[in-house]
Length: 556
Image (tube, helix red, strand yellow):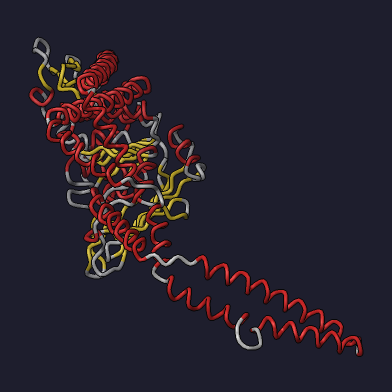
């Protein structure tokens, strides 16, 4: 439940901190006192859209913090476990600054707004007057019915959506194939032309790199030959026989010295090794020189071939491997055209099967919705009878509609509020007060299904009076035995059922208007009920009437 709220610098609220309780929490105040500001602030805790205009003038940021205490619903507990949130106490904090930046924290850890939007509805629901109009929309009626239907229906709804996706995919594939086949003559000519051209190139994977290396060697063959000859001449030529012969003579001289002075034996061996190294180099450089190919004709051929490959790569916007893969794709497409009739028949069969699967899934979903519709109708009629509409009849009409991921059902809530009248669409038969009761009945039923711990009704009793308003208050009182309920109301006949009564007021402070909230004691509650009855909290008649209403509401 919502145990505590802190609101700072939000619109006309400078600072508000209040602890709340289980049961029925009634919030009242004069018209224009700012009751809607409190529900707007709570709406931000539920992930509602924030606006910098909500920040109190002259301040840099607004803060709303809510403390929720458990136990929580299974859905909330599972969500918290999956997201690493301690589910013993949940603290949601939201800040908005004048630059339009939003900061959301859950239990001190910063989270994104989407997580809050998923978590908050599992903790609390807000129901307001504006939902009267949403209840008239058939798409909203369908959503409410599906929620009421619960797990089996929602699971079938997912299967139906998946089957619809498969059907649309197969339908598109068949249409694309059909269009290709319709255009196949020109397309086939184009593919055959490309196939002939690519095959004529006789491409080999890695050929371009091989050619680049060959061109590099052929284009440098003359200079490489000359340099190799220079090395060979230095090692083998000249009057002295070249460096190899000179080092050989040096080796023999050093050995003779070593025979006379053993200290030079190691140096003689080192020089001898150097001799053999030079000898090996002379042999290898000679072989390298003689192996150099000087072939300007082959160089021209290689350059021409590489240019041909580059043109093909540029044309097809692919490298050699990509072109070869594309050739395989072309061949497959050509083969497909050759088998087009068979392929189209197969695609049509796939589409037909996918449609049949969707129709089966949608039919099962329709059956579940019709069953749920009967159960919802009975539940709403029971609630309405308890709210002074004993002759009301309610039904959920499920008609066939255009196939969609939601199924093929058009759902319309039908009702009559008077005995002997025929069922007609809800929007055409109900007054504002009657719609309020239908909406309240729906929210009570769905609230129990969703197992949400806190429900807020924002002037949902608008337009009600007399015994009807009293029955609505009584209904909220009964609901509050199961879940925490907040009700913002102008009706004293609803307010008298409060377990805890809060008064919101607007006043001037330091030349600024501020909104404050306080919990009323017994005497304060008497006087607020009296004010709501007559506009005068000091009227003895109104006070006696308030006492009588409070006693009646509490069964005294």
